[in-house]
Length: 139
Image (cartoon, rainbow, N blue to C red):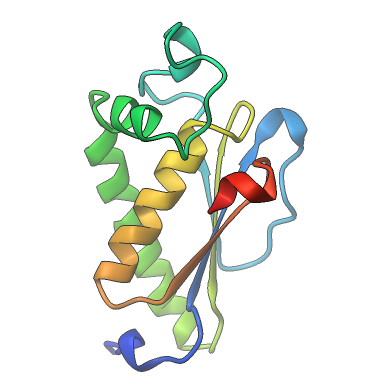
């Protein structure tokens, strides 16, 4: 059964980014956990000009998304999210996508925002929370 999420007044998906070194958020049934620690994305911390910046910085976003395999990983995550969302929707459950890297402030943020953007563009209301960014940086 296909659902039309675009008519919804509330988000069907919540993307939460975090750092594994700071603790994994509690997971529940119907939650998608994405571990970016083993992916081959370029790490901004290894690039002196980007060191100390977070995943909201335009240069960091460009750097991470230019990594080999970045768009393949985004496609994989959004495909998994859509399948799980459709399953959850039959039980009227929203979907939580937890995306983590080492510290939760760079690659996880970039990927979390990109996943939310793709899902929203596909008519699936999505909200994002970055657990390990200061509130001012989340805008």
